[in-house]
Length: 151
Image (cartoon, rainbow, N blue to C red; front, top):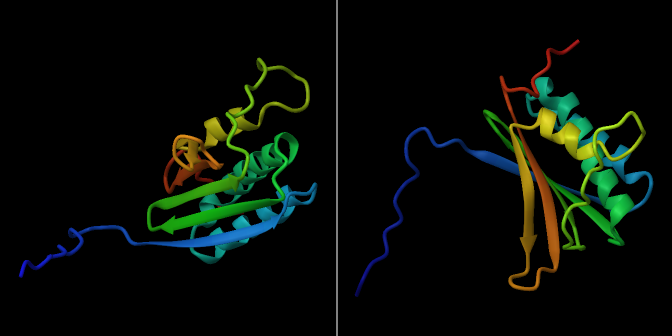
């Protein structure tokens, strides 16, 4: 009888912990989720990433509120020793809105801000050939461009 062997994780593998937060897709969602993500990062030892994570979370959740009909917004935060990855899920698998050219006007700059603070970011579509949902995600790394000294 064949035996399946599972190899142990390689030395130096970084363990992670994930947290999931959800709220109604309402005008209060960006502030609620922004504040929860900030508190989570301060609690888990990522104080230096908290403000950038708050800003990026607020911008991406605002896009869900403005551009989708999703009833709920789900945020998943994966915390590791070197940084964090935040996924903002909605059930509208459309492409991201194209930001307008940089301007002094209000609005439309959210993804530019995410691009400026995140080490990397992108979109995942879920559900196979006919996606049923998507997540916009961003990664912030300790010592990277999103790191700020605590006041």
